[in-house]
Length: 212
Length: 176
Image (cartoon, rainbow over all chains, first blue to last red; front, top):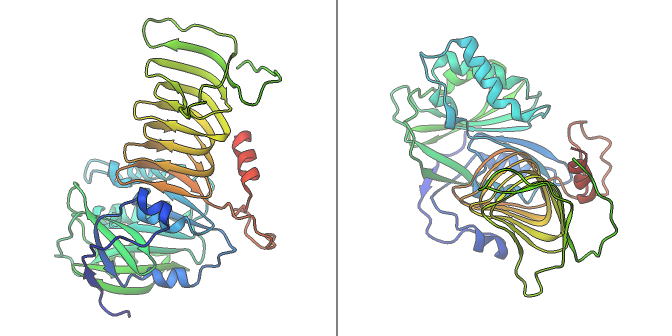
């Protein structure tokens, strides 16, 4: 288990290529110690990989990934959340299929789910996990936030990756994640994965899952 | 869509259109291919103004700013394309540098770079060696940054991981 993460408010300009720094003033609160360092350590620069980012195309993440051979599928599924109680599970499955249809025949190596599971009640999380599964393969990895406990209050933040060991978070105008799931609840819902590594964050547990 | 095969001065801009129209008054006016002399001797891009709607293929030898509406394709392989704040393109775009400040629905190929400005809204696939996204931009689709012209043997890669060069990416975009 990694050491607990230490939130850092960074007022210094981010490291970036000179031509990019001018275009991309990256703002937000920085947090160090992300689990992503394990991903990037093992990336082969000669090999193309695929990423699904449910935070949409965020400046820092795209800037970082520009340094790699990769294909990034971006969508912000929080733009059209399922409304619990207003859709049946079969309708929810169709909604998820529709929102993931842009991936087409793509196969995802890395999924950045962020807080999305915490917006879904347990039955819908299970449905989402099953609909996502068809885009994954053995060895696909997922990163998400779970709650330290079921009573955790999670702020509506949007995350991006600035460096392998640094995340940027920004407050967004959105509802609170109303269904904070613990690590075990997430693993139970996503029955095709095993827990690879977790680390503590204030109110959140950073979770890395690997498909088996 | 009618296609025209005319030998042209590479510095000319050809708008190979099915139709060009002003938003008001209607109706749409059908037009022959429009060939115009370059207007960027002073460095200013050619402009499709806010009230102009173009339906068809645009090929150019100068920079272009779209503030109106374009449906079809825009291809400026050696020049820059900007979809301005009021511009909309339901089109496939290819240019050296593509900057999107307005709305694009379609596939975008940036031979050097694609920039989605904070006001930009894009739905489609982007292929470019480098993609910059400004804070506030909205994008749904796939960004392909697999541009490395590697000598490594790609035969061991999975079939879904198609390595490629810029030319290959352009060809893929052209086919699609």
